[in-house]
Length: 196
Image 1 (spheres, rainbow, N blue to C red):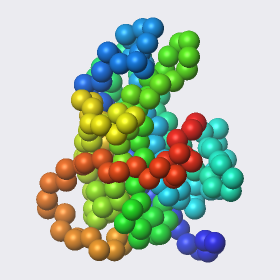
Image 2 (cartoon, rainbow, N blue to C red):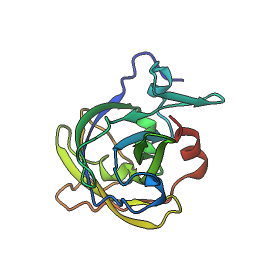
Image 3 (cartoon, one colour):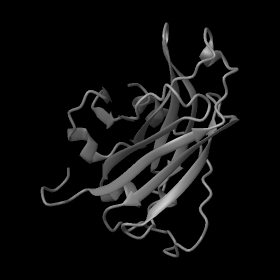
């Protein structure tokens, strides 16, 4: 249980754009038009997100997570742009767990049968946990297909920590290039948070 005086760390995530989306897949079955949007959540779910009462929250049993969602880009086609900014509250245990990630999914909104997933990636805590407070870090990740194979699409993000975060076992030298590589999905945790 969290103490009353314990403040969450705020991670500002800006979903900038995506590049190279594939229009020749089964997700765009009846139309080649892509209407993409992105959802993401923390894995494991942050205790601070347990108390949020929003339309995009989902739960399974007693585990809850908050799903953040961008707007649908109706004009960008295979290279959509969003620029949507989110303040994600995280507690210290998220940064202390080296397996913590942001699970990001790219969908297209279809007119007849709802949404279909175009790709996903995992953003490991060590890609942003050692950044100096207030520093913007630009990250790009290659998206994976549903079966985990590498796809052609790339998603671009900007992240900024609003509070100082101690991340155990990380080098504090921030003068290096960060290359984002999607890590293996945690099947149980991702399944709990993948539904809107």
